[in-house]
Image (cartoon, rainbow, N blue to C red; front, side, top):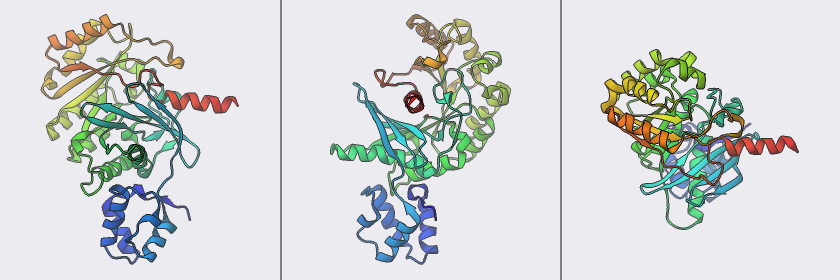
Length: 355
């Protein structure tokens, strides 16, 4: 029988499993405490469980499924981890330090099928979805790294912006949220979690109906269909005529601010004309909108794109502000390591193939 990651169970799912297997209900809380408060990685270390419960867990579940393949540390404190999954696939997870806390960027898929032409994540097509347990374990691996440093630091924020399209792995993503948000476990507040989508409009409706306080970011990157389709294949399936009504539904249902990600590509989408178009596109929702302008991290395989000049970035930013759009320029993290999402994984796979 193939064992599954115990990190993949929400507390309610763990409780139901414990009871269904003849154990007392309170055992679930004990196991949960050992996993997320004491953060043990061996069932035998769960000292207050009876032997029968311990053996049941060992027979059916595994705690650690990810192996650290590479760890890159930046001068600014950013750490990029390359993890190997049980099937040999590779994923990336990033720890970033901010003045408000420690944030971890997690991956939700092995590869990506969205096909954004500027993105390193899509260099290798989607192999499979990650399980909820594999997503949770990324947080736990980073937290274990922090625990070993004995500085009493904890992961306080999560961004679901790593490799893959989170809304294309919707159920596992939602189970992941329920695990890390649980107040009796890691207790990472919903408002400290942000998920980014390339614009799967149908799933934005579903996400609005969840009635949770997790932040939503939409990768927009262009203010019109012609340009957006050119750089993001997803716009063929969900053009702005489908995407913007879904965003309106989300705003009406949640009354929560949404962030629009806009990566600036030199002489592609960084002109004043595009800034004015973007301001018009967001005009009727500007009270609940924020545009995050992102300097481009060049990727060798996408050499048709270059980073916008500082002058262009400033002009774009000022044009949005002058048109009443709240915006800012993303602070870069880890610029002295493989900064772009998917770069480290792509390089390692190339090395393996070259052997």
